[in-house]
View (cartoon, rainbow, N blue to C red):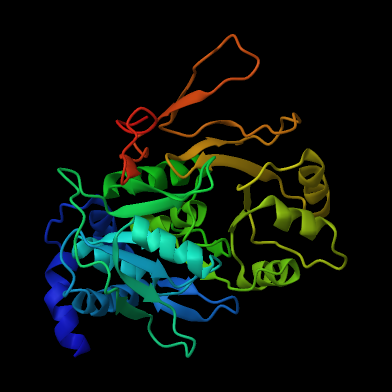
Length: 360
């Protein structure tokens, strides 16, 4: 069955022009790097070559044929090696991807599925087999997306306790990926270390879309204990580490740390990076930490390129392609307006156009 499935999808992978910019990026990646390693485990074992991601995408595409275009497919599989294949398959079937964190409780999960009118859930299987696709009985109706159906719904609580869904089309996801890679100088010659959740905006845009659109391979790690992360960083020869302050602080407190000769870029996001932690890390590992600031609604906003500013809470300059305007420039503190090709189309089900949309 595999050969039949893949033969059906080959015209797209071999040059048939797609109308989806992320799929266009994937086709270019395949042409450049199909036989290269794409996903590795922390011991250097190749889990997927780029061509094998395509094969798996063909298989998932067949399994998703029963769902109508515009349907919402929730994905709750952790940092699984099938993430790129499932996303590619959903894009080809014009399905809307809804990433879910594995850490959410049942009540949060059900509320999110209901909010987003999900029609199915892709779940990880404990045996290590392919993720399972389960149809939800309660959601047969496809949402009316209007003229601009999304490719992805990101979930954020923002400043409220209730979850909100943010609509993104592929060109916005690709813009965020390009702005990140161009600003941070990340290329296909790098090896990303993937321990932050792919289901979160940070992991999605720093790990998943660079692999698909830029051919940046990644190591997948499921062990989030700091000692294991540090050992895996050293063993895997990863060159880029998208991390969080809690990891860097833990690394600084450890004795007998391994050398990290291949690691060239350390990124910190998700919370403010204390300057004391950045200083201790640089002294211990001879590596600077680059603060990265963004939001679920608009992707990356600022990045500390130089790592020389000692002001607490400093997050750097605007990313490439991002414009920032102070709404009250004379105030000691004020809101900002962010303009970028990566900004989402609005919220769902209520768009809230005053706060989000039209590139700002």
